[in-house]
Image (cartoon, rainbow, N blue to C red; front, side, top):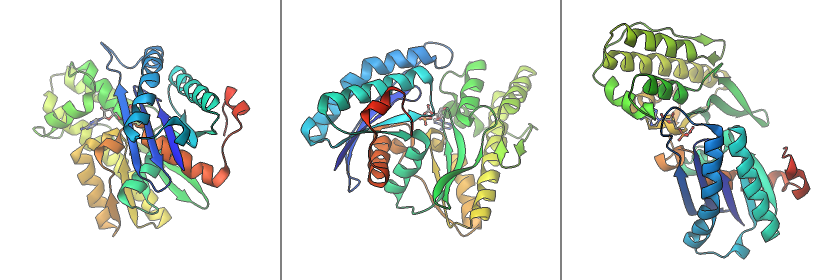
Length: 314
Ligand code: KG4
């Protein structure tokens, strides 16, 4: 069985094609870079609307297949930016209708986890999924995926990106902050873990205040990373202890950060758990993870009824 997946929940859009053995036949994508400020949902939708029709034929050609070979159209159903999600769903529905193929909508966050398992060989990990729009600790427990902890406000990637924009470091802020943090020392910032959840908006405001008061950018970047990542690792550690699992996986675009990887790996090893991270090209948003999760879900639950996809629910 061959699945074509369409992703486009935030500023990236992508089309991936996989077969039921987990072979990646094609992976095409592109990213919107805003001229200034953050990602505007309408601009993201326009970007995806322009690119999805170009990425689909490119993926099919690169996979060396014909449209007839496709057995399933998968698309990211959410969470994400509303206008962008509508473009993705409409594109998937049009393709499924024109090819007369079944369709399935899938959860973006679980897509990250499942493609991570496919790539790393992890079987049943506690996953820390960290990106520009989401920050969650997820694990499969008692017959379903459960969120063990998540952000109470903004995502960690959004926190880093906003800090980068406000201090003139540019967008995305994460990679620049990581570089500057290497030369920094610790200054005190608020550490906020409430129950199993974390919060980054107060930390962001406090970090900006430190910078405005003259603390060096290197020191603020170092302290922002250390504080935020310790919060993420604490909640993952608690979920690991609670579930008694023996695998930890890091996924999402913020996994690119080597300090976060180091902290999570150390914690995992202290608990005798194996640490996994998918290869970087599969950590960011991509169509392959959607195509793969679509296949898994279709095997388990069957496809959607096309008439359902006007307002898509699963
Ligand atoms: O999953 P992803 O590719 O897409 C979205 O969620 O949109 O994640 C993008 C996020 C951005 O917030 C970016 O700043 C962050 O990943 N990021 C990093 C690094 N590289 C990318 N954060 C920290 N350190 C990095 N080296």
